[in-house]
Length: 286
Figure (cartoon, rainbow, N blue to C red):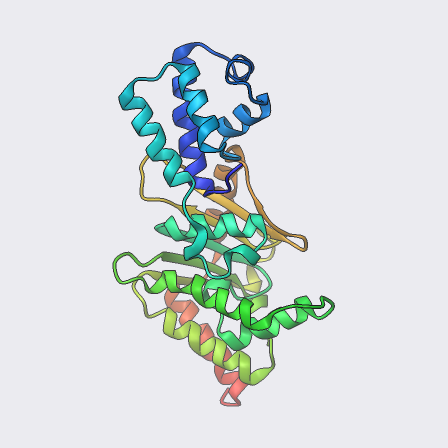
């Protein structure tokens, strides 16, 4: 199976499903006629994984596609099998995170909600290193330089000259008061947030303590939107054991959770004022 992008595989799966329904064939019938495992067909249709090109061609033959349909299917396969070499240190990244990075590269908008730390796209190198040291202190062979380079490569999406990633981050007040790396590092981090908030495509909102509880207090949430009208949003959540891709049917619910939290958050202008106040307190000016 080829790895490819999550988004590209989903689009290919939807297209093949249309061809399958027109041909009035089931995954079991397709797998039997193309001499592959039924799981291979079902994973293709659901966008989970991508069959190798020769097997994919056999599936198209079984479906009796036209030349134009074959050409379109192969175009979608090529997109789904996109080269990951553009991702810094791609081969060393966990599969789930690597797929997220591929999707994030193609997204036009990202919405995040972080309850404990500053979101990765907005972390300074020193802040990211301090967080990573705490996370990896018991792991031997951890490459701090490689992780820092990967983080910098990821953040470059915010500075693309042609189409910078639009970012809207909701950050819990607890993350804004947690001095990761110590006061000097954290003061620099708050200053960086103020700089990023001046960009027209970056929106920051703090969820203040006074809001009490809200719908997403269990961990980081990321929602990606793509340029195509027929491409649904993708959702990702993080836990102690890594990143998880959320299945399509749960994405609208998580999007609603994010929207609800955004309504409770301070306005972007109030957020900037609060960040300035917190930085002054750390620097001894408050």
